[in-house]
Image (cartoon, rainbow, N blue to C red):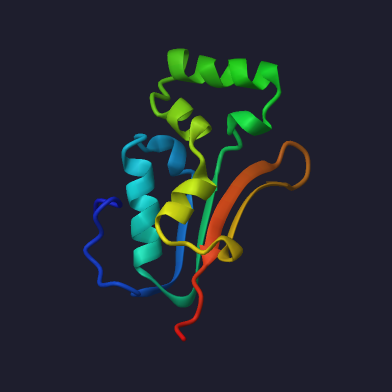
Amino acid sequence: MDATSLDFPDESFDLVVSHIFGHETTQRGLPKWLGEAWRVLKPGGVAFHVDVPNQTGYLKLAEQVMSEWQVRFNGEPFWMGWANANLKQIMLDHGVPEDALFVEHIKRGEGGLWFCHGARKPQAK
């Protein structure tokens, strides 16, 4: 199914997860599927997205050059769109309350750096 236009009713799922999907998505598609993930999430549910940690604001210069290399020579045409995306702002634009979201790098063990973002949908009042 096309993640930018899901065929599920609003508030269908308690958990929405993506793993290494953002950097495989066009700049146009990225906000759409993040919006769809939020739309299909039930109140109290969690959206959790994990991807490669190549957001330019978190990288040293040498790592930024490597990201550019990925685009040019490693068949990663959407890599820089992902790297330059402001995921916090995209989620805010789709109605995610700021106090419900998280956007951070998580390091686990040797070389285990991941970029994680998502939110818990507030309960209906």
